[in-house]
Length: 411
Image 1 (spheres, rainbow, N blue to C red):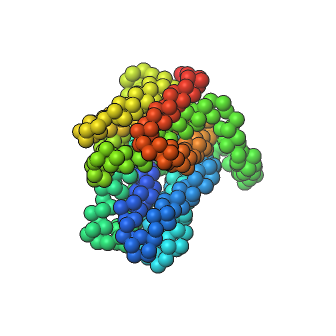
Image 2 (spheres, one colour; image 1 turned 90 degrees about the vertical axis):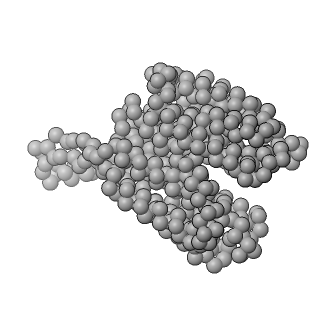
Image 3 (tube, rainbow, N blue to C red; image 1 turned 180 degrees about the vertical axis):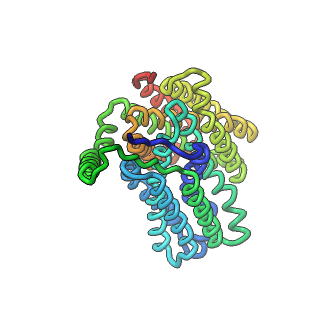
């Protein structure tokens, strides 16, 4: 009789995959505090410097769906180790660039390595935690974006000042080595199936042939299932609007604060407080929904509604302390939904295609990051008024809630 009994401590496993996902954001956003020094050395203008972020994002998007398919078909532990190691190697290579073009290629490859990571993490959670505990576990994993961004923003400038931008890239790359070791030690591989009495060469050959045929036939089955499922698409549309707001806040808040007369450092502190509150809220999101006895769909409606309200409240603040205080509450509300979007997608997909569903949904969400800067930027250029940003975000929150009302309530 076969067995697939899991071994190892699930919380250690969760810690390892969360740090792996966090590293993708650390390696992406460490460019921001180093940008000025690198630009000065190579004579890079602002547009070229911005393309370093776009290059990373291009590689990141391209590997979302392939990463999900691989996680469902193969062993996510080793794929995660390879991706984290490659991300570390590429980050280290940034310390050796001799031209703008060389750095651009390295950033694309770094994005490629990072694009597969979320799918592997979600698959590890699905195979390590029982269904009723997955929302809480995914909440911890999805605290990675604000955690990685906060690390990059808080450590980048001091390290750059102390050791220069090249050595800062090397220091960040060294973090990947530690994480790879943690994944190897803490993330369990599935237990091998024990053979039954019919363990003959013919029986084994037949089983291997059947398994190979099943893999080949089901290669795109999870992907097709996602994009033909009305519930998945409704959640994806709602999450697109949600991500439009989340990414938009991080992009425009500092400039909005400066338009009110505050310094860039003060604006950055608002974003930092927002992110720290988001980390805590994301970790608590699954447990909070259970405490309130709310389904994923109903919790999304509640948290997105709060997010819309706090968007308007934030837009009315004119004092620095008001921006900080409301920013903390806003950050907490803004990071409550992610856990329930991803857990719902995994639940709708079934056990076999959890990673494909998570990565496909993330692809839809991340498309908002491409569209948001153009729409909001043009609105600001047309009106010269940063306050309009918050009304655009409020409208997105309303639309996001409306899409959730059409999602069937999960049991």
